[in-house]
Length: 383
Image (tube, rainbow, N blue to C red; front, side, top):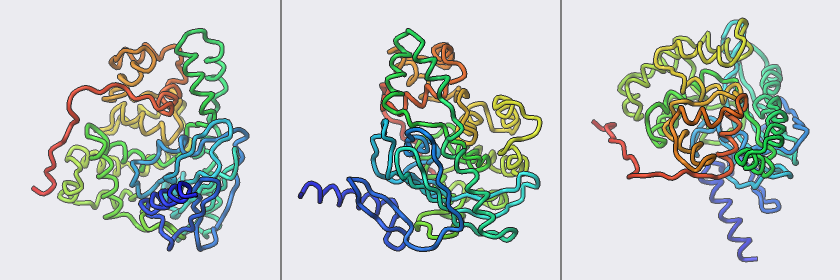
């Protein structure tokens, strides 16, 4: 009894650290899980998505979240083992803006709450606000995108068959990981501008620097989303808001001048990015879309791949040029560290599914060896 009480107190403290206060949410303990539900405010729309198979909400959506303190997207800070039973009780908060695919004009703002009801079903509730359409109309538009966000269209059947029919040791190991985590999907957020900004902030800096820059950007300049949002939530910035951030404030947010300049160039092309976020006419593949993104000065193949993995569920786009990824893939699959060329060679048998291989390695919990002291970047923000 005492240990259960202590576990409950620990979970409640974790929820409090995430900003889920009593003013905004009701915290319920049920079978060892913490379920967060909005305490007030009827949603403008609701949708239940049946994935048709066990679904792992935390491990599917965690790649969209930028650190534990992400102000725009956050999976509930409660552990779920996953497996054939899915992750019932898991949930997430998200807020974003809706853009017209034709005119690239803002239609409204959305607060989204996701709650997994059982092994395969997820309930989505939306609160919306906008000047050009009613909240109910905006909610219908937002909820129509939820299946893609959850990864409903991400079909692993071909990859699973490839693993099953291959006789090599690496495929057998990946198949075992997949059996332990059958509910992992690749999400498609569709928020091309927002994700591109977050990835630019991660260029050639440490994890802490990148996460700090994103948090500070939204905390200083982001607006509150509609509905009963947790106190920590902020909407991602519009292109106009990004362009208005002065250079000295980028410096205060620990964002280096080259990255700030790239974000301004990205913001200048926001209209085109909003049109590309859907199903752009004339673009035949994600590789072609990645090529369009790299035409922006400061956006390379690594940035394009990291972005499209989150916005379009890119199953085969690899982040070539990543500082850690080749070592992770090489050690996990061969026992030896490698470089980008070696990583591409190792992953060649699973071409078409290479990002799925990377996701399986990451959700397995494998950690590659690290050598030397941890990098401590100089902090010039007060200078």
